[in-house]
Image 1 (cartoon, rainbow, N blue to C red):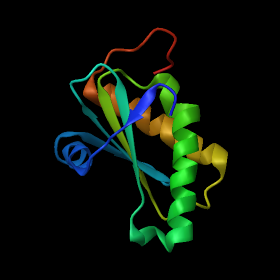
Image 2: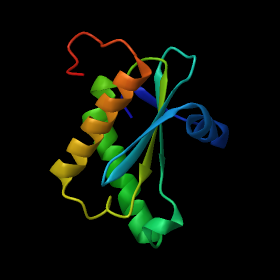
Image 3: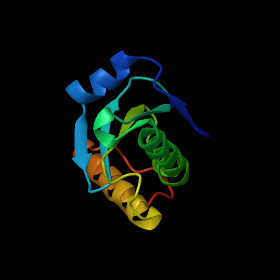
Length: 122
């Protein structure tokens, strides 16, 4: 992911769930937490509730592409973002999935009180 590293261990995902904020949309759940590092990191997960392996892999691929297109340009330094697939993620139209992510990221940035970067819309 250009500009974003991945969250390497399960502990990072658990910390986002425990200490972070969560925003839910129809096609995606996003968790965000400060990571105490210089760069932003990304984690993507899809549980067995999503469906079989094919459905989970499709959902993860879509979330990875969405993160590159929508999240990477507005991600705040020092933040961990965890994108969680929902049942709708694999079949939701691409433009609506993008709107879901934009809306949830804006909500999380406002809630966490992180400063806007120059040139960002949120």
